[in-house]
Amino acid sequence: MHTAEPIEKVEGPSKVTEIRRFRVFRYKRGDAESHYDEFDVPVGPRASVLDALRWIEVHRDPTLAIRHSCFHASCGTCGLRVNGREGLGCVTFVRDLGTTITVEPEANIPILADLVLDMREFYARFPEQHPVMRASEFLPRAVPPDGMDGYERFEDCIECGLCLSACPIAATTDEYVGPAALAAAQRLVEEPRGADTVDILRWADQPDAVWRCHAAFECTEACPAGVYPAERIMDMRGVLVEGGPRRRAPVRTAAHEGARP
Amino acid sequence: MNRDGRDLRAERGPVLRKGVGVSPSGWFDPRGRTIGGWAFAVNRITGLGLVFYLYLHLAVLSLLLGGADAWNDFLRIATTTVFLLLDVLLVFGLLYHGLNGVRVALIGTGLVPGRERALFWAGTVIGTIALIAAGLHILGDA
Image (cartoon, rainbow over all chains, first blue to last red; front, top):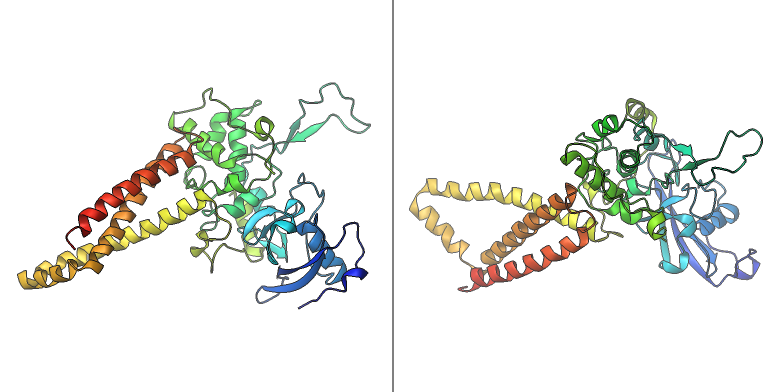
């Protein structure tokens, strides 16, 4: 167990007000099995779980593997399970958690090391027809910098994998393509932008695709980007039940209601 | 998952599952679940319970092969309060699984989108009333 230095020696932008104990999942390639390490971490009132993990990495164990980028819930790289619940480490605040905080990697996605996942299988679930990026409709007249043909934007999905981790069905079979891929497919059906909707519906109309979902809606609860994967899966089922695409009311989006906190 | 994804499995690291142990127990993790997750988990548990009951029922009926005495001996056990409470538990399983099945069918076919929680609570009210009525009927003479 790793204990904290005296509080007054800790440097950082946030005022330290207390010590929290973190149980952190550990695994390195070649290990016979995983285990948990415990760290006492000084935290301030605004500290996030990602802040705490970085403190551990800097002050206690530089071998701790974590993945992050933007620190404001845009990149989706710091997806974790905190006390068993899916969330982005950068916007999961320590003050909302208990005195002992268990941090694990997302479930149902292979682990590379510690809290870092091998996301290749996650991306392999997406339909090949799915465009990861598309031309931005928000900046039609903007002049891009030299070397860029134009601006592109991602769909709302930040591909964090939290929905797949939260899904109870994904825990039972790796063949299920999962909520993120199905939500992406539904977006194509809802707004084809030239895509072949018959082809994408054929992809979705499979036992391990849209029909494998058991409507637990945990993916929608876990999604930090307001994609509402479960609603999109149900919508696509409705399209399939009715025999093909037709004009339906669009599934609510983050743009309609504001992104989930 | 496409072929590339399946090929990746040969070289991948461990996959953390929810709950205790690995698949298929990974579908149940009580930590941090929401109503939908609990509804799914209880639906699966009651489903497994009903399958168990089906075979138990067939086994009990096979007592008839032993003649009237064997059946009457069983009935003396089947009318005890403890056994009748198990009957109430069975009714709970039937009601929950059936009503939740209707709920999932309505939202799962896209016919009633966005009303999963309202349907859950409506089913809970209907099921509770039916369970109380059934309980009174079953235990009334106990």
